[in-house]
Length: 214
Image 1 (cartoon, rainbow, N blue to C red):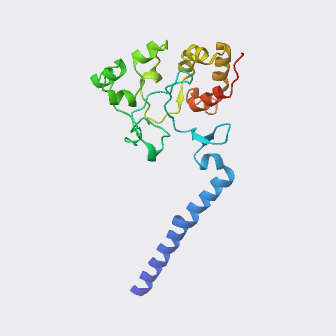
Image 2 (cartoon, rainbow, N blue to C red):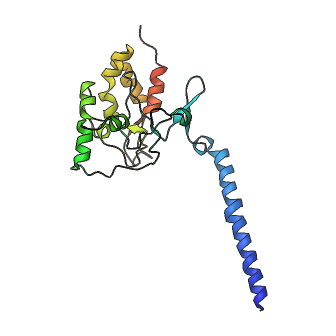
Image 3 (spheres, rainbow, N blue to C red):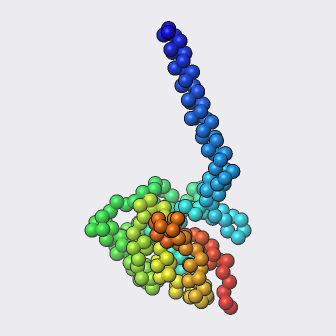
């Protein structure tokens, strides 16, 4: 077999593989996702009662008002801030990842204890003084960041610790708030993997839709 024929065969094989793996397969997967899993394929976006996109079920965002449940702290200060009107600078970090600070690291102890610079205080709200002032018993997920820094969930325990504050701020019964927490708690995957978690954004939207007893 001649050299030119071998080169021609190699080129044809490369082109075929490129078309199959670089064009046909990716577009087929996109089409499959849009037809079978459109919600997940488009970012698991969450809309409010007015139909406006307020975030993603997969990415957490900060809440500071007493009327809302607080998320766990984040090293990247995840947010839905508008990049064109970004005066607070919350999108400057923009990289997912943990702090990689050991439990004994002085920087972590200072951050949790509230001994931090004003800029860092804006970025990470999970400090003991802040939680104690709000009457919240600190839990691990309210003071430590997650491995991705994008975790949209807190534990049911962390949500329950905030229920008194929410009930007082909104004029609701504590039982109403606890019922919403229970309704918005995701169980273990397939019943055995992972731990139960509360999606903070979904829970806060449910709060906005909840009517006061008065």
